[in-house]
Each structure stands twice: as structure tokens, then as C-alpha cells.
Image (cartoon, rainbow, N blue to C red):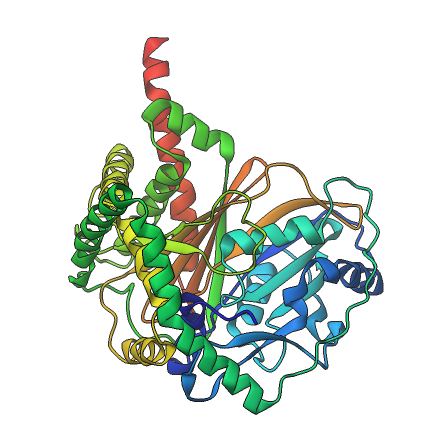
Length: 467
């Protein structure tokens, strides 16, 4: 029986403790027309279900939190409950797309059913159509969620036939048996921990090296105990969302990297820095060096593990330099701070914390998570997550996939989050904001695009001077 990791369970607990939070991730895939019929779309998804077993499983919780919730087959699975049909009002442009994403992603998912929804959407401008996918974060992280596109869609305009489907739900275990399994899981926890330690001791030099690096990372991470400076970026949420996005050509990112250096993530974070600076200034708030600490998720997946539907992430917690006015300084300081945190082992420390939690009894972990959500969070101002998407064109029922708009949730007093996603030759910044406190979400979207343009202009200046 497969159980949630403590990290995945934390996404459920965050909803239990905060009625304004919905921990669903997702994206909107926009296709060239003409749109297939809804029935064609349903049959297409039915043909892909054998490749995605998690889509026919639901979570079963354990009494008294003896163990994390477990994935079990849904005896009443009905694919048509998970696939919805909608259409945008005219003209089907960005404003209508944003409203649909905001409305769908604001609503919590029914935990008595498998935790996914697909919205088949017609009426987009230019005769286009879309697939809005919604997955609970306990089911997948950004990398594994993105990999599902490789299963649902096709690499060529020719649609692959559906796989033979002989699935029948496994019988549900009686309550007594299920609880006994949880008790056995609890009893096995110290044994599993001891086995892991014994394996580590077979390479003592490596163990000492990793322990030192992790300790250094934990020391660096402890700096996040310092609260961020007060700003309008943190505060109570109302449970409804706003959504906007900005897109830049990937060639612009390459231009900045060639002229100024840095990774793709560094360049994207620099553009986000400029966008938040413009947002704060537009609100008549003076940005300070400690206004914007971002949680930056870091994937810990081994190569080839992208298709495993779970959560394998750590994090870094850098301050983004919104107090600086020069675009070159944004990129330089972002590079320095991200590199320093990587070198100090902060991602490894975060991963070690999540790993150690897997070898602890689940009840105190769950209680600690729930208690944490009752304490006012003042250490993080935003989340900026960067997920590499497909570089080659995908197709849905013979239609070219033209754009992918990413979505990341907000919660725990964080009023704005940014998902950064690449598809083909476009980098898209999907921005989620609290409905009541972020009516100016488009200012941030426009600011990110303008900041990227400033970085490109700066990167090209040496070449201009040479001519």
C-alpha cells in the first residue's frame, strides 16, 4: 500500500487548518482549432487512464493519524465526474481565460474522489480550445504534473490509440485490517530508519561530508526565522483568486545569459524581482532589502523519475533584491544569493528534513504541521517555482499545443505566487494572487515583462557599443 510522504500530507493539512486555502496545482494548455467534440475528448482521456493509475485512486485516511493517508482504488470511479465541459464568453481573450482559471482553481477538491479534474474549454479567441488541468498538490509536484502531458498528449499530429483497459478496483480493505496495516507501518518506522543508517555507515567519509554540508545548509536556512519587513505582500487571504500571466521569448533569456551570465532560473528570478519592485512602488511602498524573501522550490528527483506521481522537492529561501533599481544589479545579486545558498547546502538540508520526517511517527509530524498553520507566518513573502516544460511541440487529438499557462496556489499569508514554465520557445510566468488584496495583479505581470525587456536591453549594450 502506497502512502503519502509527510510533505505531501502537509498539503492536505494546510487545507484542514486554513479554510481560505486550496492546494491544487495546474495549468491551462491552449490548442489550435478546430476543437474536437467533448465526447471525442472524453474517449481520448479514457484511453490514457491505464497509463495513469493514480487517476483512479483516492486517499484513505488512518484513524488517529497512526500513519499517513494511503492511496486506494476508487470503487465508484466515474471518469465523467472528473472531466468537465465549459466555454468562454466572447471574445474568449486573456480576461476570460483569467476568470476561468481563477474560478476553477479557487474551489477545493472533493477528497472522497480521485484528486484531479480536466476542464475541456471551448470558445477561445481564434477558434482555439483548451485543457485546464487541476491536480491536488498531494498527488504531484510541478515536475511530475508536467510529465503527465507526455502521457495525455502526443508527440505528432497522429493520435496514438488508447491502451487496452482491464482495470477493476481492488477490494477495499476492512477497517480493522487497514488500521492494522497502519500500525505495522508505525512499528516498521524505526526499523526502516535503522536500515537507512546502516547503509549510510558503509561509506563513512561520504556520510561525514554529507552531514557537514547538511548542517551548514540548516544553519543557512535558520536565517529564515527572521521575519520579512512588513508589506502588502503578506496578510490574510479571502479564499478567492485572481490569475494573470506574462510571456517572454526564450531567445530573450538566452540573450541575457550570453550578455550578463546566470542560469535560466537566475534570469527569471531577476525579472520577477523587477516586477515585484514595480508592484510595490505602484502601491507607494518603498522596497527594502528584506521585503521579499521567496521560497524557491528545488526538485530532488533523480533523472528518469519524472513520471512518478509524488512530491520530491526541497527549497531555497533567498531575499530578492527589490530595493535595487538597476536591472543589472537584480541579476548579479540573484546569482550571488542563489549560488551562496546552493553552496551552503540549503537544498540538501531541506531534502534531509523531509527525508528524516519519513522515518518519524506520523502523528507528531501531523500535529506539528497543523500547529504551524495556526502561527502567523512572517518569513516568506512569495513563492517562485520554475519547472522546465516540453521543448518540442505536443498535440492533442491532432491539434497543435500552442501555449501552456502554469498555475501555483497561495496560502499561509502569502498573497502572491509565481509559477515559471517553459514550453517550446516561450517562458511563461503564471501569477496567482489573492482576490481581495491583489486587484492590481496585472501590474506585476506587466512589470515582469518590462523587467525582462530591460535585462535584454542591458545585455545588448556592449554589442551596440562595439558597433
